Image 1 (cartoon, rainbow, N blue to C red):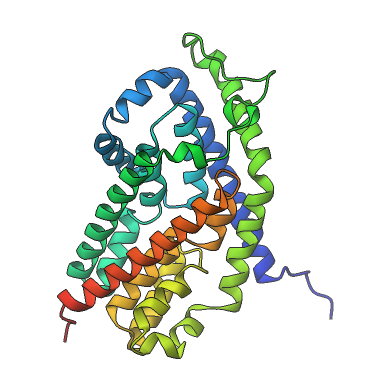
Image 2: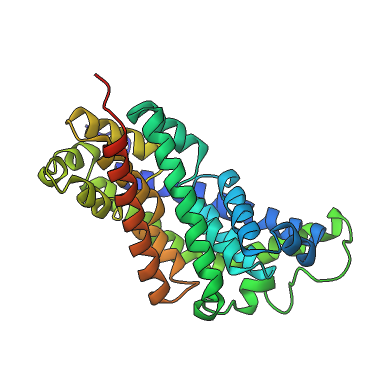
Amino acid sequence: MAGSPTIHPLIRDALVLFAELFLLFVGVSFGLNLLRRRVGDERLRTLMGASPVGAALRGIGVGFITPFCTYSAIPVLVSLRRAGVSPAGYTAFIVAAPVLDPILFGALAIIVGMPAAIIYLAVVFAASIGLALLAERVDLDRFMKPLTRADVDGGPEQGIGTGPWRGLSKEWRPAMLSARALLRTMLPLLALGVLIGLAITAFLPAETVARVPVLSGDAAIPAAAAVGTFFYINTELFVPIADGLRAAGIGIGAVVALTIAGAGANVPEFVMLARLTSRKVLAVFGGYVFVVAMAAGILVELLVRPAG
């Protein structure tokens, strides 16, 4: 019997997610280009703080209000570097943006309780400050890949300009061309990140993760931190995974560890960041997130008494 053609759910999800992230990436890049033109790089550097601590705090603040998605954080990171923001500022932003998210915090509070969520928030906040100050001290710029001309202004024929603001009617087109140029440099990695994230989710669904034996043993917290790095955790994926873990009797410390690792250091994020930084920095970043995830998980287990 003839029927209407169907699309495999994984392919459909990939197309929908890619379209959403495509629009988000371009929209964030376009908006930031206009903001830089209107505010100016010098003022933006001033707003981000003169001292390393001030820059780190403001970087965390920007990360807190950035849409919860690695793919929206990348254009912000590029814009901060283009504006000459200090390593403390952009490091605090990129490590805080995925994990210090109000929606994720709310979901975590519902699933593991407010005390555990507050410990999660405090540990991630303190760790973001610490890593940002370390990045400033070692001058992280030395280990970052230089921005190409396309990354900076879209190329020699479509730059966003450095002169006075000319009004939105004249500024929107260069800003869009620059956003499009940045997208071209990142598009293959964007597509690869989407495919990796969806493939992992398809082959390791929430119920499968919840049944992993090591997550219920003495090594539950480090195991959860390790498993989390293979996931691209957004709110839609986090809720069923965390619910499945709790329903299977997994401790709240392991849930917190998996949340930090999955949101803060996942494979799709590494794919995107590899375009901007060295492998050495990526390795340090991955190790940092793993340690922070374990520390938060252990603190939660020690300080929070499970309900019931």
